[in-house]
Length: 190
Image (cartoon, rainbow, N blue to C red; front, side, top):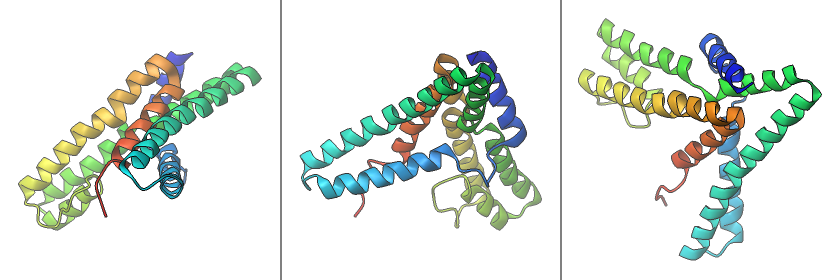
């Protein structure tokens, strides 16, 4: 069943990508991280040990919670009807992937560079990178786009596919939970 779920998810992502109107699991994961962090900071001592404990709790709760919720949902759906379980796995496999959107956004950068419209290329690359793009040269825009395509090909396509093949949508979404924590936590700020 996993093979068909992965294949179906890959095809769904290729056809539809991530529709803007559909709440994405990574958005929910981000909201959970923010809520957990806020509550834990209020509840735990404001010491290095308290912060370490809070980080350990978030690092355990989010992936294990994601695995439990998605795994039980897929199992329950399959118990109702095997095709319902397969459909849910396909849907979540598609949401774990970001191939179509990565291609679309990187091609937007390429088209603007081909046209010679550097301000538009900067805006296009700003949609896919987390750095200031205002003063990038055409070479800088190109480098930023290539770097983000390489990183997001790993984070948004290759690694999720690997985890899907091992454990279906639940394991792929658990990977996404860990990846989301990596991009949200551990940065020093005020």
